Length: 248
Ligand code: NAP
Image 1 (cartoon, rainbow, N blue to C red):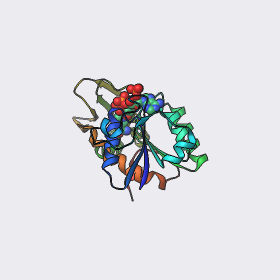
Image 2 (image 1 turned 135 degrees about the horizontal axis):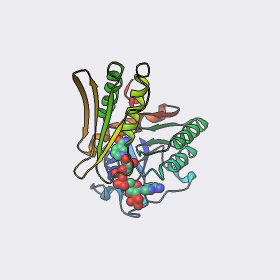
Image 3 (image 1 turned 30 degrees about the vertical axis):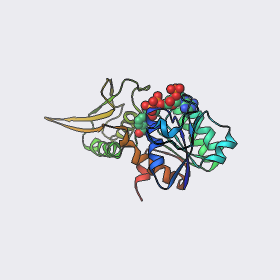
Image 4 (image 1 turned 60 degrees about the vertical axis):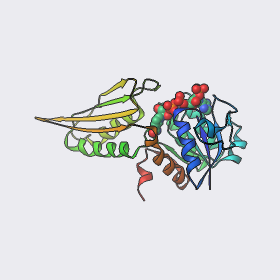
């Protein structure tokens, strides 16, 4: 059994993760951390039967290290870096789904993962379809370098542009570097009714190519999250993007 702590357990994504961990036979939910709904049973909060794990504030480093092997974080851009650094200090492998990290935060997490010899993952999108969308876009960019990205999300999303759009743009920019330099334009849409969507549109003489992914439900992210929880400790240092976890 892999002992899992979920940070942001009372949030939209955190509740889905709690549910997925409770349903997985090889995973054990050992801590549910949040700043909201303290004292509530994490299972009940996630719409499951009570599981006996109350939502609690962050413990100290030693207590976290004694409780969990993997930390899944779906919180806020303001708290995610500190959460990940505390986990790494405790020898706990962070699986980070929170988006909006500053470049300097990513560097700090990479440095801490290296120093502590612990695996860590930052994945702006855990949906397999979104991972494939990024791969296909990277391939297309070598042949069709004129491209723009439209990302569309629910209005409560705190960061714009999305982490998925930024990672897609970075991958396209390096794939098309020989034909074209400069940043790929990203357009952000925030509307009620949306979950998480992205369209990558390539243009060429007399033709366009659109690669689109839609997450219609937050459950779309859970197979990727569980894969990461099961594999993160087999890596050393920071990995960015779920791709490396899909192969082998
Ligand atoms: P949300 O509903 O606002 O949930 C975030 C939760 O984290 C809230 O309960 C919040 O409590 C709590 N929190 C804030 N600071 C905390 C701290 N220091 N320690 C513990 N918990 C803390 O947000 P969401 O929609 O679940 O999204 C969370 C993140 O996941 C966002 O960055 C989003 O972009 C990202 N996301 C990633 C993926 C992916 O595939 N990687 C997919 C979807 C979303 P309060 O309400 O008290 O602030």
